[in-house]
Amino acid sequence: MVKFGLIGNPVGHSTSPRYFNSKYNRENINARYEAYQLDSADELINLINKEPALVGLNVTSPFKTDVIPYLDILTDDAQLINSVNTIFIDRTQSGKNSNFKLIGHNSDVDGFKILLKELSLDINENQYRSALVFGNGGGARAAVAALLSINVNPTIISRSKTKSISIPDVDVLTYGDLNYDVISKTSILVNATPLGMAGVNIDRCVDIPYDAITSPTFCIDLIYNPPVTQFLNRCAHNGATIKNGLSMLIGQAESSWRFWQNQLHQLEK
Image (cartoon, rainbow, N blue to C red):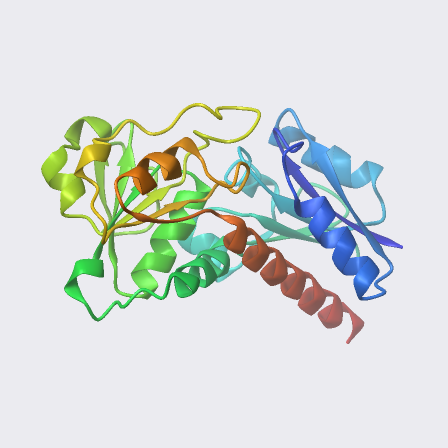
């Protein structure tokens, strides 16, 4: 039996083990998926050494950037947004840190594209040309890349204007820059922060002028547990169309699975 898994902190809220293990049972795949909570990305190599059946890992907050120094190869999507949420473990070759080679990929971009498709945005209309993305971590970078791919102009909202996002030509504002006028002129709002997540910050949300949100606005939260966060609840109260991150989770999971399978097929050649 081969194993796959998730690393992050926390991971107890994640539905990934249930999703993948149900998939394996349904499709008669001889595999197991487990969640591994790590205190730091430094523990990655030790985990792989202790789990010789591990073939692939998903990576969640806060390690999507922290794992990069331990990887040997990055795919184009991972390089573009300087974030990794999927790792393939090639035990047939040695890498820079160990007796296995680690290949980093990002499937979050694919996942967010699927989420946007489900919203049926008419990007030919000028009202859907702008977006604000709250946060500057790996999820935010994936959202930015996906929005750019459909010709929507995203702006990152962060606590400081220090540009930690690697995608060029993307503006960065602080929360202090937001006012009624900025929010009211934006058609897509994306929460890519952990605020509102079950078990961590469930009663919190980004501090923005919610009264500026109107009915044509699409509001997206990358969080899927709870299904309706404080952010989505307040946006819906003002007439916005809301969507949580469940379809992104499923989309990126299937994209991760395809990546792992493609890598395994390459080894079999």
